Length: 104
Length: 221
Image 1 (cartoon, rainbow over the protein chains, first blue to last red):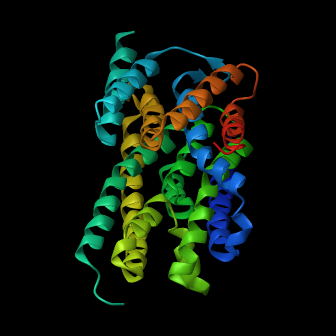
Image 2: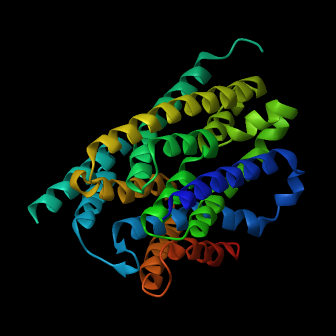
C-alpha cells in the first residue's frame, strides 16, 4: 500500500469511528431500537474478529497458506483453553511462531 | 462531583491497566503492517477503539485495499454508537464535553459504567469518565512502546509478530464466546472466511464475514 493510502486509511478510519461514537451520543434512542439491528450488531464483532484470525493466521494475499503462523495460533488456542491471560497468549504465539520460522 | 466510591476507582484502574498490553500488541501490529510509529500513535489517539484499529491494520497487513480496511474498522465501530445511546442520558453533557465523552465511549468505559449500577448514577458517571480517560492514557502510551519496540526489532516474522497478530484477534474474540450459539457464529465466520478467501480480493473476506452476523442475527432465537 502506498504511503498516501496509509494516511487515507488512518484519517478516514479515525473520522468514521469518531462520527459513529458521536451519532450514538446525539440521536434519539428509538432510532437504533430495532431488535434485528441490535441482534446483528451484537454479532458483528464476533464474525469480523473470527474472520481476522483466519485472514492474519492462515492467508497470504488470496491463498490459504499453512506456515509457522499456524503453530503460533495453535499454541494461542491452547493457552486460551488453559485460561491464560492475554499477554501470555500473544507472547506464547509469537515465540512459537518465531521458533518454527527459524527452524525452517 | 461527590467523592467517588473506592470500588469504582479500583474497577476503573484495573481495567485501564489491563488494556495497556493490548496497546503494545496494537502498536506492534500496526508497524508490522507498514504504518510508521507516528501513524500508529495517531491511530490510538484519533481512532481510539481497539478492535477497529486492529482490523484496519489487519486488512492492510493482509494486502487488502484501503477501502476494505476503512469499512472493516467502521463496521467494528458501530457498537460504540449503541454504547453512546446508553451513556448519553446518564452523562447529560453538551458541546465539547459531549465530543470528549463520545471519543472515550468504548467497550471498557461503557462496561465499567454499567457495572456500577448498584452504586448509583454518580458512581456510573464517574466510572465512565475515569475508565475512559484511564484507558485513553494507557492505550496511547503502550501503543507508542509497542510501535517503537517493533520498529527496532525489524523483520516481523523473525520475532513471531506475524503470529502475534492473529493470536491477538483470537484473544479479543475469546471472551465474547459465552454461549454455544456465539461459538457457532465464530466457527462459521472462520469457515466462511476460509472458503471465500481464494475467490475475493485480499481483505474483502473480513468484511464479507459480516454476512455471517446478519444470517445468525436475522431471526430471534
